[in-house]
Amino acid sequence: AQVSIGANQNQLLKVLKEAESYKGPSLVIAYAPCINHGIKGGMTRTPSVGKEAVESGYWHLWHYDPRLADEGQNPFVMDSKEPDWTRFRPFLDKEVRYTALSKAHPAEAEELFAAAESNARWRYDSYRRMAAMEYGKQ
Picture 1: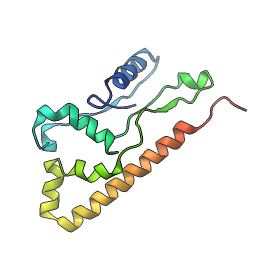
Picture 2: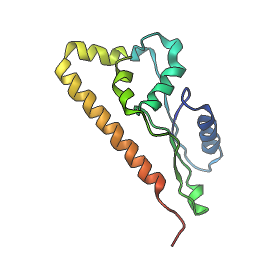
Picture 3: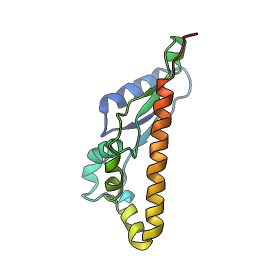
Picture 4: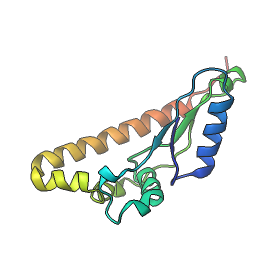
């Protein structure tokens, strides 16, 4: 599962409950801003940064519960809404780790940022397709 505390606390709690109750290994990956991200405005913005990461398409919320397949349901659930892709680059520009790269190596940074957005779009589309698959219907 992928979660972000600042983006959707209900999804976070649901995922943690599912992971805890599952009889087997569970993996929950959380978007967790840290001081090394160099968040403009400081670490007090952590919850809003997590929300912005999801809304911009930088981070996607989803969970997978194999027990749903036993009930004939798709075990992959996409919890993110369609991102506002116009906010992807501005999201990057709010973190010093990205703006420092832009200042030191502008051409390379542009190429990497474009590749990062392209990859984020590809992941979102892949997750959306997985979430649309039908299970249990023969």
